[in-house]
Length: 196
Image (cartoon, rainbow, N blue to C red; front, side, top):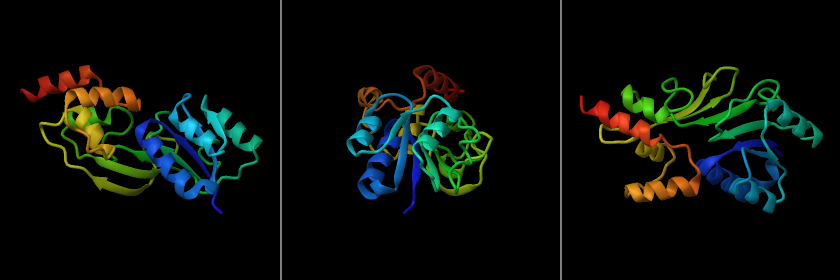
């Protein structure tokens, strides 16, 4: 049996956790969250250990205290940088899901830079190392972005969402999903840049 440590956040993290709980519940040793949220509630309801993430060292201590020997760690829409010794604690390391076509748009604000720099866009799974989104790439998928897309639309495309119907829907979804969207100011700047 594989033992996994999951660090999950946002709508995409919740969807991944739901799928893993439904299909591989007994392979999950611990789920880390950024704050009390739906991921925490789902994990507790499934009887999985949950830890609110403070820093990498605290997470290592929680894993060791629970005598979990993880085979793999998964960062599922995880917004924080993890450090050693957490990175190398799982036998096979950590794998990150990143909403850009690496090596383009590493780090945060990937949707903003995909538009401003007219860079290729997509999603990437890669191993985690000490750098920011610099680990070996496992798999990638390109996603088309065109000049009419806003930062919010790009984020939705990266999250696999088909719910792009209106600005009102996007605003409602932003509040409901607690997802990392490009700010309204970033979208305004992008609109200005596109005019030139």
